[in-house]
Structure formats: structure tokens, C-alpha cells
Amino acid sequence: MSIVDELRYPRRWYTKLLVVILTLVFFLALATAAIAGVLTYWIVKPQRTSSEINMASFPGRPDEVDFSVSGISPGSRRGWFFPGLRGAPTIILCHGYESSRGELLTLVSALQDHQYNVFVFDFAAHGANAGFTTFGYREADELRAAIDVISKRTDVDPTRFGLWGYNLGAYAALREAEKDPRVRALVLDSVYDYPKQMVKIGVEKTGVGGFPLMVKSAQTTFEWLNYGYKDDPPLSSKLKTLVDVPTLFIQATDDPELGGITRDMFLKAPEPREQAIIAHGNFVNLPDEEKRTYENRVVTFFLTRLPVTAVPVAAPTKPVH
Image (cartoon, rainbow, N blue to C red):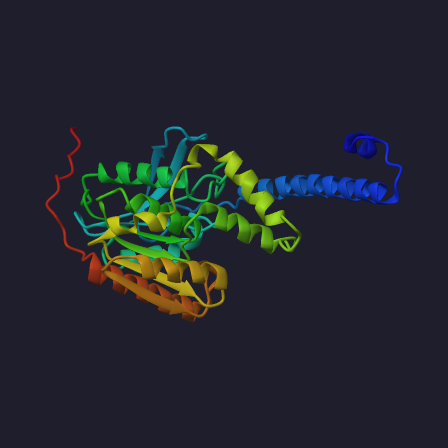
């Protein structure tokens, strides 16, 4: 009798045991894949929160700026531009995963108070935007579109931008900075090297990350959803392009996973680089005193590395009556 026949019609006790084990393994793998698929869906489609403000009464005289992102659905975006010194550089703030532009307004004010132009917007699947997050792949394209539209304004320096980002936003900022010479200074808070590292963190937060192959299955599902980026190298492989781009890496001790990755990225980065180690991560949830200290550190970095100097720009056109 062949092995195949024995497996199909087991007669010996050990063959029956083997069939039972193989059946259990098959259904366990199937259940793991199904659960991982559901988890991945929840992770890449986070719950959105509204971040609308009354533009007429909000301090800082912000303008609403609409722009489009090709190849992304939906492709329309709306951001808030807070004007500073005419002809000064612009700082773009890139919010983190499960956050929004509305949660960064205190940091906006701290930068605008020092005469920077500041721009904030929501990534896909955040704020008022539908869609799915790619943990930085397509978000870098959104950021580039934002830089493109702001650089066309007549009241900014189109060649000098600073970027601040937290986790998702930090990855998008670094990915864009590695190929955009307009980016002259970077603040990267809890940055990561591969988007799938954020998937791992997302699965572990659900409490099922310890199940065999659960993290790997979710990462595989995420990579399949973003198959077009399968050949993209880690960001650390291109850090050398940041030569002469001052970069501040912020590492939170209460986030050991992202903190460790941020430390490794800092060690691989070229000069000029700086490192800040803070006790608590996630700027938007910091208590007031820690938040002010954080804002002062970020503002000081930009003032030192991207000074507020104005370049001549075209005078605003007077309306014809």
C-alpha cells in the first residue's frame, strides 16, 4: 500500500494520529490567515476623527488650501496654511497614525510665533479623508503634492521646507526628504524603516501578536495589498542622501520598539544629525508641561538649522476695481 493510500484511508494508529495533526495544522493556519486578514483591515483603516475648526475665529489667520494627489483615491486633500514672515521657509507637520492635523495646532502656533509659515493636512484614512493607510508608501506622495502646491505660493520661499513627523508622518517625511532637495531640515519622531514594522506593532496592540505566525500573516497580507512597493528598499539604505540636511531624531523611552528603530536610524544617518531622548512618546498626548518642552526643542532645532530669513517674493497683486 502506498503512503498516499495510507493517508487517504489510514489504518495504523500512527497514521491516524498524523492525519489528525495535519488536519489541525491546516485549520489552525486557515484560522490564523483569516484572523490576520481581519486585523490587517482594521489596522489599515483606522477610525477617523473630524478636525474641523472655525477658520474665521482661529488665531494665526490660516488659509484653506486644496490640492490633489494623482494615483490615490480619493485624490483631493485640504490643508491649513498658517502664514509667517513673507518669503520665509515653510514647516509641514505630518501627523502620526490614528491622529489628525487638528491635534497639532499647538505645535503650529509655536512655530508660527517664530514667523515660520506652517502647513498641516490629513493623510488618507485620517481626519475627513477616506481610504486606507499604507504606512508611508503613498503618504509620501501626498506630502510631495503638498510641497508642490505650497511652493507655488508667492509668499513663501519655494526652495526651503522643513518637515516634522511622528511614526507614520515621520516615515513619509523621511521617504520624501531622501529624494526632494527642497527639504532642508527634518524632525523624525519615532520613525521606522519598513511600513510592515507598524503592522507588527498594530497586531501586538490587539493582544494576539503572540499567536504563532499571526504577525507574519498580517505583514504578508499588508505586503500583498501594497504589492507595487514590494521592491522598495528600507529607508535606512538611502540615508546617505541626507548629507547636509540637518536631522533631529526623537526617541521615546516608553516606546521601546519604535524607540529602538529610531536609535538605529540615528546611528546610520549622516551628519549633521541630532538625537533627543524623551520619557514619553506621542506628542499629542503629552501633558502640558512636557508638550511645551517638546515644542521648544523642535522650534529651537528649526531656528538653528532652518533660520527664518526671507527671500524676495512677488508682491501681491492688487485687485482691479
